[in-house]
Amino acid sequence: MHINISGKRVLITASTEGIGRGIAEAFLREGCNVVISSRNEEKVKKALLEMRNISPSVWGFVSDLTDLRSLEELVKSSIEIMNGIDILIINSGNPPREPSYFFENTLDDWDYSIKLYLLSAIKLVNLTHEYMRAQRWGRIFFLSSWTVKEPQRMFSLADISRAPLIQMAKLLSKELGGYNITVNTILMGSFETEGAKKSLRRYAEKTGEPLDFVWKREVISQIPIGRTGNIKEELGSLLVFLSSDYGSYINGTSILIDGGMTRSI
Image (cartoon, rainbow, N blue to C red; front, side, top):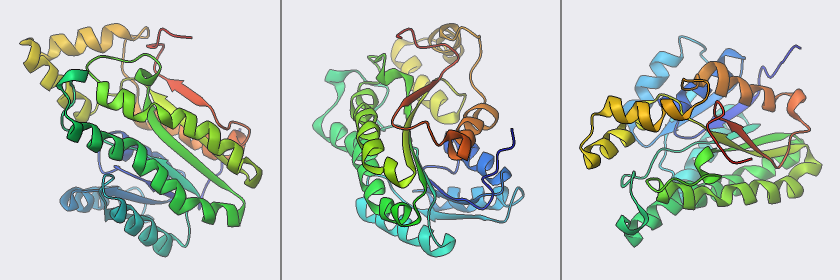
């Protein structure tokens, strides 16, 4: 099997570190043109400096997923610099409040979370789909979590706010499939990132337990294969495959990549 997506134009949100960064590097290694983003300008500059050691075909912009006007500027700048967008990968960080239980959250917390996960995805699809329709080719991915299938009390904001992405991917697959545009949701398991450690660190502080103990109990012991996933080699490779012609019949579905962590069928 020879996968060739060289030259494809990829926009990845929240991609200067962690999950988004690893995916961006996977696409750069396949010869793609990539735009990364973060709301932190220094993180954008640092990531670009490092990632250009892989390929010069990477650009970065400051953008905030909770600011719809900011997303308009991100898409506009991406299209100008890459002359279009073929692949849209919507990744996001965590709400500041999490981990938190339902009744700990204020309406402001819910407002932020819904903007972060759901409204940003709606906005980005609306901003990019016409370009994909015109070229009759495109890939759209919503990066979500296994926990929308098996909700976790401590992740109430994320699990409720991004659960609708599954329905949106299914609906959009019917709207856009005729244009050779696929839309899928990726339900990620555990990957060892600073963001993941930060969330569990706050949880460990709440329970008064050591972080290493909480990480082993809440993460590692829950994964049948006994380890977290590799972002570049496993998650990145999955998205590269789905972005290729080999993935053109996979549309409107939710794909688990979790090492067997999810107990539901």
